[in-house]
Amino acid sequence: METLTHFLDAVARWPAVEQQYLQSEERDFIATDRTIEPRTPALQRPLAARCTEVQMGSMPLLDSGDDDERAITVLVTGFGPFQDRYPVNPSYEITRSLPPSIPQTTAGRKPIQIIGYGSPIRVCYAEARELLPPLLEAYHKTIDLVLHIGMASGRQYYAAERYAHRSGYSKHKDLEGCTPSTDQTERDFGDCPDLMETSLDFENVVQQWQSTISDSPETSPACGADCRPSENAGNFLCDYTYYNSMVWYGRRNKKLEGGASSDRPVIFFHVPAESDEVALEKGTAVATALIQAMVEDFVTHRSA
Image (cartoon, rainbow, N blue to C red):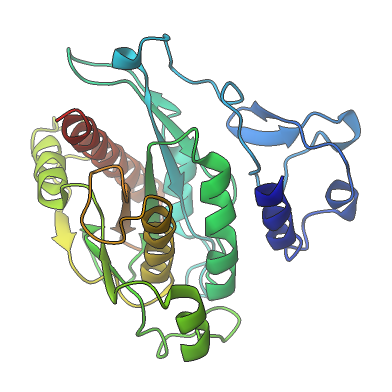
């Protein structure tokens, strides 16, 4: 309950969440169409946060009971609007367009379950800092991997990010006009390295991802997509979100650096700014291919 209490404290910052929910003693939730809702009849409406403690069985897991065939579950997040120039953020539109599951297509390939976080993350440092730890804590018994999706307005290609930075955010203010202070960074991340890296085999993930895209038939929205590795997540909310997630996993698994594939099983995915129907279809197909590559690498190295 301590984890849930911290989560509700963070949720209380969001005006869309009603005090009736916050004051309720009911803490039992069900999943409906990938949206998490309270069981209490008076409160059965989508929550602004769309997340709380998730119990095994709350979401429709593709689990036969045999660990060799158990679905690998991936949590995916996206961001909300950014300034007047981008009233629609393609990262969240892609997140909500992803299929809920990817069946086992060939022998040896795990089925995949995708949980799209039901609300866009606001482009604010404080929200990322306060939301991510309780979100990951709530889901950690259910998920295996995390994919954060964000928009890179200056890029015309898709990029998988390798690293995230601890500092260097002072030049880019968020929607509230804020940046993380030096004192805040030291309090939050004083025990952490300046640069954090996903524990997945990044080069292998990118190679498999690019191979899938290059093999896409002409009828696929992913056909011809420009997909690249990146070592610069941009020192803004995308970078900051990525760092926060890897720190959470690194502390939990006592592996802030190095370690096994499951120690920091997170990747950040940057997409171009276009948000028309064609662009979103392509982005969804490219994101799906990246998820498959992440799962393939995770399963291979976990069993090695």
